[in-house]
Amino acid sequence: MPGTTPGSEPGAAPGTVLLLAASPAGRGRLVDAASVLPVLAAVPPAVLSGTDTANVVELADPLEPQAVLTRLRAAATAPGPLTLYVVGQLLLDRRQRLPHLALARTTPSTVRYTAFPWHWFRDELRLRPPGGTTLILDLHTDQETWQTLGIAQPPGSPGSPGPPGSPPAPPMLPPALDSGRDTAVYGRIAPPPSRSRRTVGEPAYMKAVGALLRSGRRPPDEELHRQALVRAAAEGAYPGFVLARRGTGPVPGNPHTVITEAVRSGRHADAHALAAQHEQSAALAHGPASEEALHWAEVRADLAMLAGDAALSCHIWLAVAAARLNTGQAADASSVETAVDRAHHQWGRIGDPVRARELGSTLAELRSRVPGRREGALDHVRRQLSQLQTQN
Image (cartoon, rainbow, N blue to C red; front, side):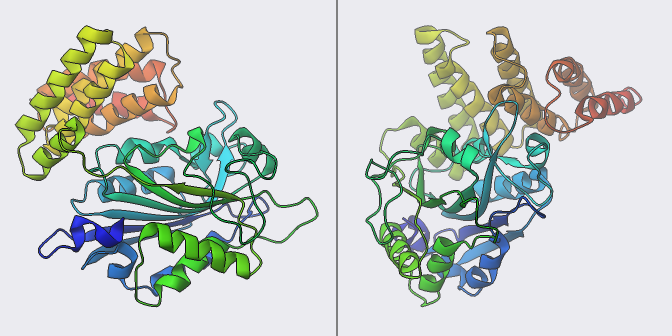
């Protein structure tokens, strides 16, 4: 929890806070997400983070998912504790039925291209040190999304909506909102509005969080969560589905913990070698294209990125994407798209034109099969390859 993280120790790295408030413009808006930002902005950064010092990044009704991804990626690579306050509206894309955080330009028919896929949170936070990341959420949904997430249980069942003032549900999350096993998650998903209600809802839970923090004291996460639920309920807000899950703390001997510590101390080669050993062991035990082996390949790709080796990172992501396609995964599967998108991103950072040409040819072939969510991605690769042909 941020109140007791290493970031509050003398000389420790400052905390990072990302305030993200997003909802569609126009008739599809269910919540006035940005209305909570003045409340949170009035809280001192150190209190928002629970550390001695903190850096705050604010995103109010962003337009593009890639802009959100860029800010999230930068926050995720910060060395100190990370706290994300996210307020917004969940919608499903029509193709894969995956939850997305709707942005300002999002409509039901454009979710896949204009909204922020929820699994991107998990992808970007997976290399965070255990115990160093907290998500505080106030999310709103329509009836279809509510049911698809699997939270339309009858009253009284575990995790189901309870009456105002009822105690939090057991620590659990809808599987589709998985944000990584090491991430602590607190908040609520507001129930769908009734058909008779025409007004835009308020982020009552997050406003309660902000009001409590304006006192200048940051209680432990679970206590802050409980107090916010009680305060919101006292003001007549229906709690909906309560989210409460502790993140795992640092576990001695856990390979992810050891790798994270190696990266933080600048021992990138040691971190990469350890991940490679685990990948080899997983490949021998489960097969080179197994999820266990591919997980460690993806870790190696991220480690190469953190070490500044864009060519190696791109090469590994290309290999992961090809392996997933060869095992029969669909070209629009999120894991395949993520691998190709990350390969594309790292390819653009390669300084050696010879290596960039080599990897660019493979990337262009993959892009023809996996166009991704950004329009014109294949054309971008082809244009860049054409320019590279004139360089030594």
